[in-house]
Each structure stands twice: as C-alpha cells, then as structure tokens.
Image 1 (spheres, helix red, strand yellow):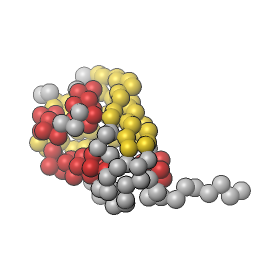
Image 2 (spheres, helix red, strand yellow; image 1 turned 90 degrees about the vertical axis):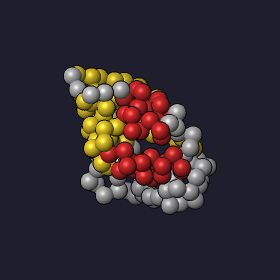
Image 3 (cartoon, rainbow, N blue to C red; image 1 turned 90 degrees about the horizontal axis):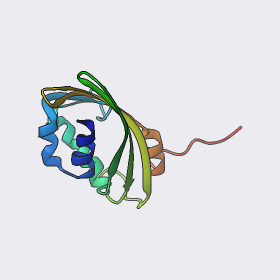
Image 4 (tube, rainbow, N blue to C red; image 1 turned 30 degrees about the vertical axis):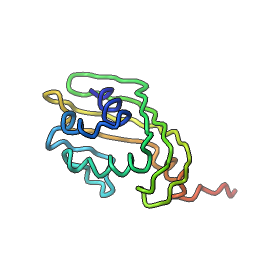
Length: 137
C-alpha cells in the first residue's frame, strides 16, 4: 500500500487517487501546520497541493518497507526542485533531496492513519525559510 501511495499519488501526481488510498476519516499526522493532523482526503489535499505546487517534479523512492498485520513502515527519499511559489516564498530553483519515514495503519485496503517524520529543517533551510545554524564556537 505505501509503495503504491508514494508511486501513484506523489511521484505520479495522481491526486485523483487520494480518495482511493485514504479512508474518509483517515488521520495523517505530521503534515499539517496545526499539529492536529490532516483528517480525510479533504484535510490532506491542502498539504499535497502546496507541496506539489512548489515542487511539481517531486519523486519518491521507497527505500525499505516493513509490514506486520495492518501496520506498515517505510523509509523514503524524495527528490524535487523548488520551482513554484506555493510555500510562501519565491521559487528558488534549487534541487533538493529529502529523507523521511512513514508508518501507516491500513484497514479494508485504505490508509486509516499515518505518521510522518521527515527532514523539515533541512528542507526549510535549503529553501531559505530558516537561517542555517551558526557554527559559532
């Protein structure tokens, strides 16, 4: 399920499949700006649209998957180029590589809950949203 999610929805740009893979009341933790979690496909779409709008060439490579019963975890690497203004800053044209991990609980062939951890600081620093840490000693 996670491989299809990343290959079809993210790398393939198939936003029409979001409703196929996410349950109507699914909760996606670690993606929204409030910390509450995105609920359902409608709650997930603003994050998806913002990131794909800023980096329409985003591609995910699922590096590893471990699954047990309804739970699956994957480690992934995303490559992307910041060519859109959808993140609140002008496009930088920078190519980035971002790593992360996702854990999902699947019921009846759909993701019902997901936990996402990814290198937000590296991403924000590379785009100039956050100043790099000083190396003052």
